[in-house]
Image (tube, rainbow, N blue to C red; front, side, top):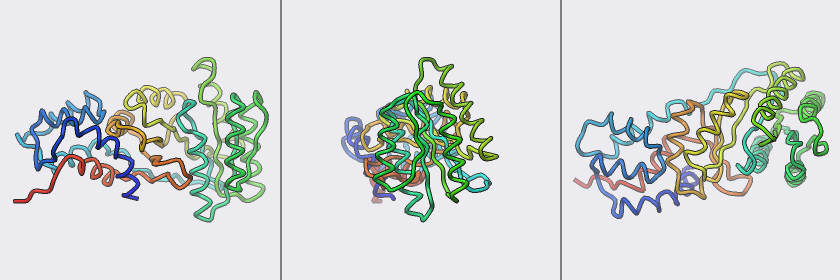
Length: 293
């Protein structure tokens, strides 16, 4: 796991060389400010972190403690539920939502669980086709209709099928963008309501997929989705393809929501459970050397 997370931070580590050409045992607060901003930590959060550091020289242990405190909300506790476990996956088009669904499905299947997918993004024909292809590749059943059909009906049919066939996990895709945000909000609320009608308590988890290459610009997007439907956790994709790894601190701090997984590659197995300790240490490894005294 650590190898995947450290590898996913390689572009961020490379970008830091412009402000940290040589690793050191400690840095000044001004240097730490430059480092954090280069990693795409939001300026307001950088100021909060620096305000709580009183030492003139900032060591690895000092910065580690402050960075970990920004990730205080990233732990997740699964709710109590009656099987099947229903997940609603939300996010804008292009964030990697469909690929993430396939990775989640592959993960559950590898754990011996019976999984079914619901192609609830009926706004785009391409989304239905892409998810259907993944389902065939993974040998996982899928409930799908045609473009323009009622997405909430797809959600209902998927859950109903899962209950009658004894499935463990239901993963439902949703539209990423409609003509207006109001339309999207109304559709997501309707799907959530229908999920509960099909299976009391569902969806048990609503997951927002965020494109890691967007950095801090994803915060406003995440807040909008949270207001629309209520988010239980976040998956950050494409972390391996960005130099903005530090934005995870800003996202977690601003939203106070758990980060469930990070996408660390294109393959189904490249979905790594987020561990704040391993993430912070992976970033600090690019900055500090051990004290040799």
